[in-house]
Length: 153
Image 1 (cartoon, rainbow, N blue to C red):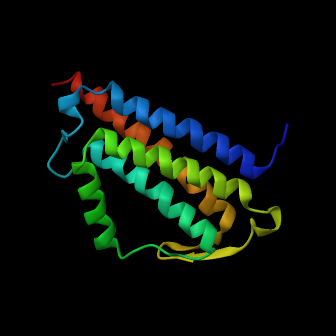
Image 2 (tube, helix red, strand yellow):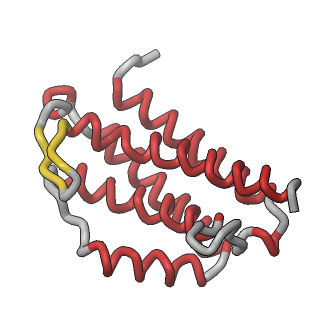
């Protein structure tokens, strides 16, 4: 059994993609587009972010540099994706997650410390590779929090 960072992240990202999907599917259909407050996000918006970010992160890892779009363009694409519904988002999450895992597994050990400049600061490639795992786990918690609020209304 291999114990590389790449293998750990690939397995963790795969599991977390399944977990965030399961969290969304536990919500009643009408509550997937509900926001608990005017300034809150919907579960579908959060889910769309996870789907998109896995693809963006795969692009950054492959290019070894930031290749993201301006934030306003990203936000509009996320709104557009969320509006397309569960099946479309879920398909994009699966596709981008599979691609991300393949890209992560292809990263050689000697590239893990390569510094990547992003609009959010600079850091080693290994941290960029870990971002989707953290992001989806965090958003699984947000979706579960939305579910917990449903008991209050």
